[in-house]
Length: 164
Image (cartoon, rainbow, N blue to C red):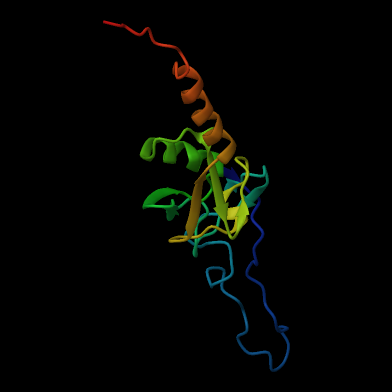
């Protein structure tokens, strides 16, 4: 979070009516709502979004930096992962590699029916708290693993026969 001082733009004390006849007491006090006083003393809190945009921090509602729980489903099981909403799918894969035995390059994450790239942000795609993400093993890498296991074993080596 970045704090920057900004210039104060406020309404000062001024009279809405004239001093002449029939004006009454129409002065606006300096510490009424909408003037500069307040609790924040003119400081505006800023935050840097993942795209590099500097915006004023939200005071209420859903914060972008909050933790969300994503339910990751594989074919046979599911995992509840707590992660920041501003994380990328690549960071989610890193967390999943600790939970599952799959390396991040072996994982394919699908959200709303589409495979997501490692550089895509969760909150930009629309992942919210308690949303479901599907985890699949990359079939090309799975096939390479099977061929690697078969190639490493000596299946076709002849054996010596002993005749008695």
